[in-house]
Every structure is written in structure tokens, then in C-alpha cells.
Amino acid sequence: MSAITPVDIKGLDRETLTELVGQKGHKPYRATQLFEWMHARGARDLEAMSNVPKDLRDPEQVTLGGLQVDDVMRSKDGTRKMLLRTAAGDRLESVIIPMGTGRWTQCVSSQIGCKMGCDFCATAEMSVRKNLTSSEIVDQIYHARSLMAEEDMQVNNLVFMGMGEPLDNLDNVIPALRVLLDQKGAAFGQRCITVSTVGLVPKIPLLAESVPINLAVSLNATTDELRSKLMPINRKYNLAQLLQALRDFPMAPRRRIFVEYVMLGGVNDTDEDAKRLPQLLHGVRAKINLIPFNPYPGSRFVSPTEERVAYFLDKLHKAGIQTNIREPKGRDIEAACGMLDGAQPI
Image (cartoon, rainbow, N blue to C red):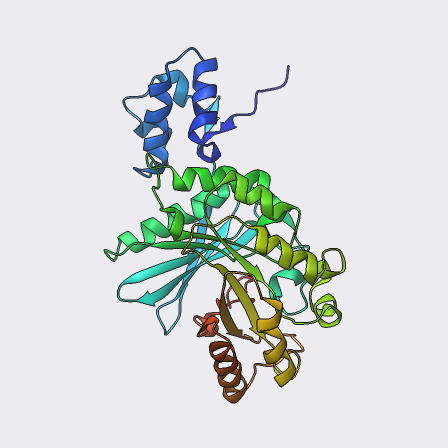
């Protein structure tokens, strides 16, 4: 007779956890107790849950799953990169970024590797490609929370822009988001979480229906021809389909969709691109983040010149579109946008 595999309860939202507890003959408040121990109090040991019945914290029936921290790298600009390992031994990374005035944003990974194949991203070149579980997703935040608490600081915002394509792993990302938004748990506000996609068009409305968070879209080109070369997903869901999905995305009146535009020197930073970009976004309530490309070992692309970035910024501002330049953070520890590859530090 085969042994029963313990249920990883850390990745269950409160509704699902309540169902599990009920199946074991306990009242709903016991699920709330478990949930608060894991997500509000940061328990990593079942035995620590002293007010929970023993059968609900039996290690043969339930587990807290999660990740192991292998290393924490620190950049000269204050950025931290956590190198993490799953129980199966696969490596991933999550980055904590200083935003000024004492605020910190964590860049969360949803997969190990990525099968989207974007031509300018180190994660796409990883040999291992698999989904993270909801437990592994939330545990990145809890490890970061512990790390920052040692310095009397905290993570204020979460951006699902780390390793992987979040909408390619919605079965785990949505439960993780529900856990993180739950006011009995991690208690992040809706405005404090952003999920990014390369443009999996059919999954965008599903995300909107499931959880009330911010949406970011990695655009990176102003023509289908170039975008299909840089981002293979465009061959399946072209710019017209993607932009219509953005126009249809439900948002509160003052909310905006974050449009990420990675600027590749001599590739997508021409005068014509600067002219086409605001035209493309007509009817989309957008805020643009210009991201100068962060070179990584083996990449064929280069960063744009400061003059090119300034030109884009000026043209977009004149077109009436709110635009920011995302200054690179953590380049010296390969923690900046597009550089995460789970490699062992040297």
C-alpha cells in the first residue's frame, strides 16, 4: 500500500483550506487559524501552531512546502537578489529592489525558466523549464519578508516580472495571488501587486475575472514584423489582438495598464518607433515604462544611448502619455530586468 502524499497547505487560498479542514471534521475557524499561522505570522514549522488540533498539523498529512534560500547577493545600489532552491533541487531567483523613501518592491518569479522564448531575456535560455507551485510562489515573498525584517524594513509592492510568464501558470499564480491579497494573511493591497505578461491574450480576461490586481504588458516593438522576431508569442497573438485585450481590460477609473518597453539599441529605438508607439496605444489607458536593455553574457543586443531614451521620453510626453524611465537596478549582480537565470554565483 503506497504512502499518502502530504498536502502542501501553504499554497491553498483560505476557501480551499476551509474545505480541506471541513473534510477532516473541523469547523471553518480552524482553517483561519492555520492560514494566519502560515501567512500572517510566518510559521515554517507545523509544531509551532500550538492552538491547532494535532491532526491538522500532522506532517504525514500536511506540509508547509516552500523554498530554501541558498544565497543572498547584494548590489552596490542596495538591490538584493535571493537565490532559492525548490525541494526538487531546481534553482530560481527573486529580487528585492529599493524604490526610494524607504519603500521596496519585490520581483517575483512564477516559473523556473520560461518557454516564451523572448530573444532579449536570459531566463528564456535556461535549460530547466517548469511551473512553480502556489506554495513556492508565496514563499518567495515570505523569505523576502524575513530578510527585510532583519533590517527593520519591509516589502511594499510585488511585481510578477521575475523568471517565467505568470499567465502560463495561472493554475498556481491565481491561488498565490488570493493568498497574498487575503487580509487574514499577507494582506497586500490590490494596488500593490502587478502581474506582467508577454501577451497571452486569452488568459488576460481570465486573470481580470479572478483577482483584482494591476496588469503590465511587455510590448517591446511597434510592428508585428519586429515583435514576432523578438517575441515568438506575437506569431500567435499579434499586436491588434493584444491591444484590443488591453482596451477591454476592466479597471477602476484612475488605474492604468503598465506597458513595458525594453529599448534595444539600434533595434526598436528609432524615430519611427517613437512615433508609432503612442498611435498603437490609442484607446488604452496606459502608463509606459521605458527599460534600457540590460546586457547579459551571450546576448547579441546592446543598451540604447541616453540620447535615444531621452528622445523617446520626450515624444511620449508630448503625446500625452505618462512615461517613466526604469533605471537599471542590480546590474552588478545580474539582478536587473531580463538578467535572471538561476545560475550559481561565482
